[in-house]
Amino acid sequence: MTKYIIRRLLQTIPVLLGVTILVFSLMHLVPGDPAKIIAGEGASEQTVDNIRERLGLNDPLHTQYLTFLGNAVQGDLGSSVRSGRPVMDEISARFWVTFELAFYSTILAVFLGLIAGIISAVRHYTLTDVTVMIVALFGLSMPNFWFGLLLIQWFAIGNWMPESLEFLKMRPSGWGDSWKQVVLPVITLGTGGAAIIARMTRSSMLEVIGQDYIRTARAKGLSERIVTYRHALKNALIPVVTVVGLEFGGFLGGAVLTETIFAINGMGRLTIDAIRTRDFPIVQGTVLVISVLFVLVNLLVDISYRFLNKRIDLN
Image 1 (cartoon, rainbow, N blue to C red):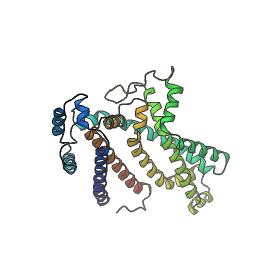
Image 2 (cartoon, one colour):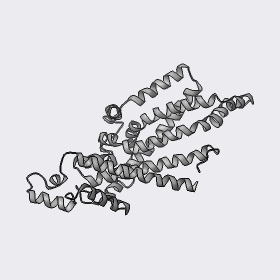
Image 3 (cartoon, rainbow, N blue to C red):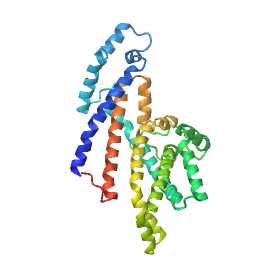
Image 4 (cartoon, rainbow, N blue to C red):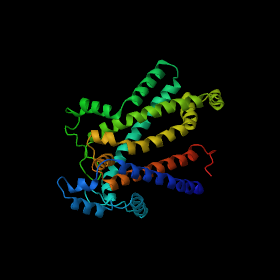
């Protein structure tokens, strides 16, 4: 197990290098000059040149990248072009907001997805199965930004939800005091994940239910509940757990639209603001942090296979 973890961590190094190179290159292809944005309209060329020299923007691209990479290895992601604060401070102030949003959305997606998938598999090819899969297809096809706007129209503009869409109150916990400030963004982000998990659970359960050992368990007189949850579901969880890990990583990186719609000051909104102002260090820092988390989540998913099925050898 230890050798496997070390090997997987070493394999993430080229992945992260590729991510940093791609983001660094794309940011420099975007039109606009961050030095002119900082200097403001009407600034002299000398002022702009001084800012570019201070930020190191006059250096060759490979020199800028190597400087960024060397500092990142030491835990220094640079300073924000816009605010002048260290990038890690900017990210840490928003990280837990996005993490909570992704975590709660994952819980909702797993809860709804497992229930819907199990019901659909147990009652396969019935009206219930068809109805659940149609609802799942609708949830999978529905854009988050559209669904979020509908939820705001239905619930937030009224007495049941907060009148203000400034959901974040900048408290240490990340959110305000009321659960009402969390529920709509979580539903918006978690619905698509629930649909994917439901379809994967159904497919995996149907494959397992047809196995010989399931028929043997039924022949021994075990109740359908025990057969379904103790034997079938446990062995069907490996592909489902894989999807859950991917969904959680996707929620971390894909919360941009949800945070923008609900005015949540998380990492997604921070990234969007940084892209608008050509704040290279912030964009590179947020993408790097999310990439590391995504890789670690997938590592935990792979390790969990061993606990779900003792026959799996990770060495």
